Image (tube, rainbow, N blue to C red; front, side, top):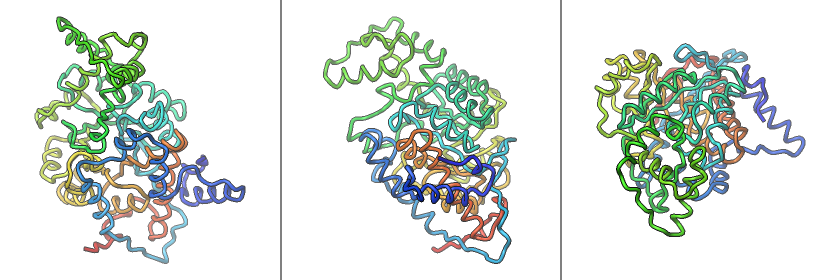
Length: 433
């Protein structure tokens, strides 16, 4: 359990004291404080399908490995004899004051790790005072997640991730809903216009969305059902192949669709909804012209997720984009891709200071976050660690996994001779290559 005084400052000492005090009574943390053990216990807890989807990478996993190698090439160089008794990790992003430079990254189909995943993740983020980027492929409608966060902390910070559909009616509807539920920014994911080659999922024949897992933003959207109805009109309903696997899938689909549709396994609408999602969820024809048109669709700050090339970063700045997330999608899209750390350096050198720059993919510890900030990132998005914590303990587990990262970040900040995130730059690091 994270103490409330953690969000008031002195994260590291507060978290340590909490853990050690519990240890006096023989209680050990439910969520391990190191990433390797967190990952090991999460794997033991999760289903094979859940582990494959959340932990797996593209191809042979070379991009995931590259993310680690690139971070390890940078060493922190501490300074001593500085007064670091008072520290702050607060930052400002798009007009919001945040308790720390960390966001909960969007992860689709989170219910593979824990039921009602997005609601629990939202609560965890609200308790820590950092934003949750709602996944467009979430397992709960965005309005439900927003309400759960507001029940913890009114107006708790949240963003929305958009996958640009092939049908602009759906795009417009999702954006309007995001604005209404209080999103502080719109994050457009650019690197998943089609799914990468993911052997862990393929070897199990497992695509969560084909079972209606992770499509709740769609099945809660009236525009989506209009599109489904249009596609069904005049098209004879196909009879599914009957097999034990197909029956199990029908049960899952029925479980994951809203309202009265749960009552009838043979109704065509749930199956049509799944097929419609698979056909229209993302648009491989997306271009910079579409991004330019986005400013006419929303007044929210626009953040482009999946930027890796400095020329793309420059073009985004020319379009007046408010922020970038340097990301290789956690190594899940292209095998042998540039690491997020190496790409961050390129992007910062190209457009640093002209737009807000965030980063994700492979940042698992407080020391990792420290390095990203020193290399020029304004904030870091945390993905797999909070999902592993979620698998171990629901909202409390997701919160504690990220609280541990923040605690280590605070201690690393002080032990390296710094008192504020704003102080960090590349002089805090040494390139070991």
